[in-house]
Image (tube, rainbow, N blue to C red):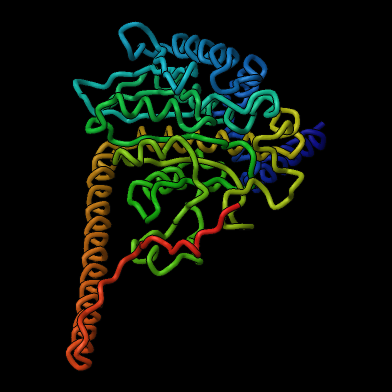
Length: 403
């Protein structure tokens, strides 16, 4: 009996020593991603629900109006206040018999008239665009998830959520919205467009390096909810001397989205999108032609799911990045500085424009004066009067052809 007891004690000691000596393995990147995904709102389910409920959202169509009603209902269920006195809908007239609508909700800050606007367009190319899963149901899903996340939070500024109609027809919704909003009270516009399909994620702010874009990327990159790298577009190595003189490091002629309407009004913007600009310095979703779905019937949930899990981490990464940055301690100051920085750069660019224009005028004046002096000198030397120069004269009769 004593031997059995001794053996049992020895076994217990061995097991204890073994357990103490085993160190927990470090979490793999996949495990960290899965854990972070579980801690955040499930953007993917919001995305699937919207695609199924509103597949046909062609600009100015009844399907687009139905999608606006769907988003209006979601804004209301999230607890957002209607922005306008008569509801969430802002009607937009766009040419003859063409009407669309924006859906606008707000989470008010404490005694402030400053606004951060988060937007995504919800229209698509209609039936040819399938259900527009990437362009731009993905942006709508992130927008709705952000509205739900911030609905019970109080910030030192107002958060205005806007779902734009008519983007595919020429920024009809965003242009109307910004032209009827006090832009002096807008600190920043955050645009979310086509963030599901693509190997890489990008944040594009301006054609030059900006502190506020760096702040977004730094805040997100250093967080526990980091899922997938978000970077600025690659520098335009093929820029001309004139473009380089304007300090446009990320010159993006391909970039057509609602942010342009705000840019034209002097509002700082940052836009999130997915793609593969490592392959080509122009907007492209993938170097594999079979994985490009924008404005085609392949832009559907089923097709994007067949490409792998990138679509999940893309949408969730943008959601995490925006949440973390807006809630960060220094965001308000950074947003104020964004507008000051933008004004400074615009003043610099305008000054360069004035200088270039003035130099061109001076050169032309010198050339014209020099030519005039030479003509005058010839006239004196040859004792010939200066000939009048005319751009147009009546042709002779024999020079006129008749048919």
